[in-house]
Amino acid sequence: MAGWHLIGRRLVQLIPIVVGITIVSFVLIRIVPGDPATLILGNHYTPEGAAQIRKSLGLDQSVIVQYGRFLRSALTGSFGHSYSLDASVGHLISRGLGATLFLIAMAGFFTALLSIPIGVFAGLHRGGIFDQSTRVFLLIGFALPGFLLGVVLILVFGVKVPILPINGYGTGFLSHVRHLILPSITLAIPFSTVLVRSLRSSVIETMSADYVTTALLKGIPWRRVVLRHIVRNAGMSVVVVFGVNLAFLVGGTVVIENVFSIPGLGSLLVNAVSTRDYPVVQGLTLFFALFVLLVNLLTDAVHIAIDPRLAAG
Amino acid sequence: MFVLERPAARIAASSRRRLPLPSRLRGRFSLILGTVILLVLALACIGAPLLTSYSPTAIDAINPLAPMFSKGHLLGTDEFGRDVLSRVLYGGRYDLAIAFGATAVTLIVGTLVGLVAGHVGGRTDTVIMRIVDLFFAFPFIVLVIAIIASLGSSLINLFIALWVVSWVSYARIAHGQTLSANRYGYVVAARALGFSHLRIMFVHILPSVLPGVIIFAMVDAVGNVLLGASLGFLGVGIPQPTPEWGSMISEGQNFILSNWYLSIMPGAALVLLGVALSLIGDGLSDLLRPAR
Image (tube, rainbow over all chains, first blue to last red; front, top):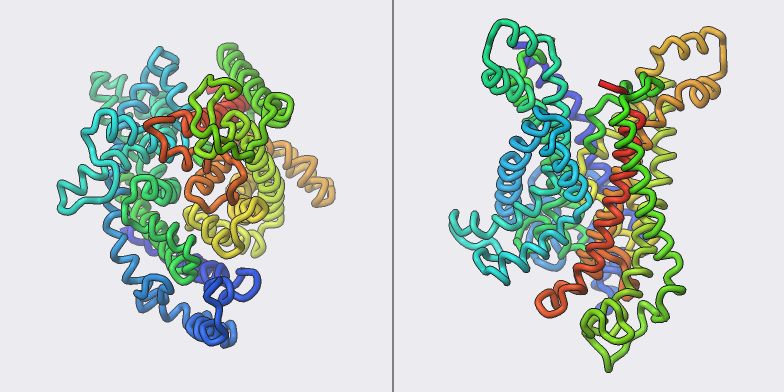
């Protein structure tokens, strides 16, 4: 019961943030220096074309009316109309969303696969050889730009030892999985450094917790204490850190999709920037923020569900 | 980002306690190694004209794609015959400028905002921290790209975008630390003595806020460099033909099979800069963190 109450309170807190997000996304297109219509048309400038763009952007109306139109388009899911692709932004988003979600899910899977064993083991054997080498991995993994790692992986696994596809998204579930192996590993390595760090310190902290000492004094074997008490507690920190840093992972997809030519939201965003397709940039910015908020809410819910201490207050 | 879940309060509350020797030694070692790497990189980039006689943008049509160690070109040339070593050195200036220019401003502004919000409290605090929450909903790179898309791509607009977006992390850290400092005995005492708000904020609270934000600044500097390079890689950062490590990696990608060093050399420089900054951050946190 108390858990639902907590989630309800989160939801209420979200309302001003969602309003703020729509305002920020709305203002973005208004900071274009000069006349957006002139910029969009570039060499193809004609007074009629410019007038039409101003009309479709709603620039000929008052700011309040413009914001109202923007809100309405967001609520109906159309998010405005693209200039260069002749489709509603909502339609473009729904076309690219699948690939991006698939990529995020696989990257999350590889991150967990990589960071949970490393983090727990390094924490349990603090100061040992493995822990010391983990520091080197953390140091380089964090400073390694994802796109450079992607380029190197393309060179090694796509060209020298061509066992995996290096671009595109494929068709059908298994083909999607094959196409996304390299991109999701590229995302998982830098992201797992963040998780390993917090897992390691969470394990170290838990080892000196009262309930671990109690469990040991009760005569429960060490292996079981590790699995039932320490790893379980560390698992919660994974959920929390994952939620807090999700925006970092989503941001990573923007870059990595472009490295591997995956037709997701990140590729859509970068293409829209190069064609000065402002409604698409604006709609995507808003969509990305709403997406992060939604997932944060879900991780909160999961955290509340698996950690009874939170619901107990 | 991961510094956020480590309570900054603990960092400061016991920063005066002596740490066990191994931790202090390791901290000092990381700090010195990181500083040395950073200084060498910075000197090489600033003193680029002394180290190479080539202009980073001079095109040599007769000599494109020269291999490494070829005559006169230690790291070879790119597809336009431009000297790679000179491009890496001159390009580093931009990445270093991002590391320090972008980070220094957000460090100061964000810390001040968090400090004031935490100290003043009340409705001001709520409003400011809600704005901070709001920024955290956007993936930083998406917001930066969107701002640059509107303003146009140039070095100064890249700075503006980073300034607008990343002060919020410092505000959040400084805010949390200020809230706990408000309860410390000496802060309560200073307030009881009737000291001015400014004096309490800067003399009493700020010193306990600083370790947390400075350690985070090193992590953030790495993040800013990678972000700047990512934008260069995506072609929305600093415009051509200015050399910048991210855009050099992107250009070299087309020749990755025959001339791998075109991408890997600027990439290695980028990683080295990131490692140096992380080492400094790790060293500082080893030295300033409380003993467990």
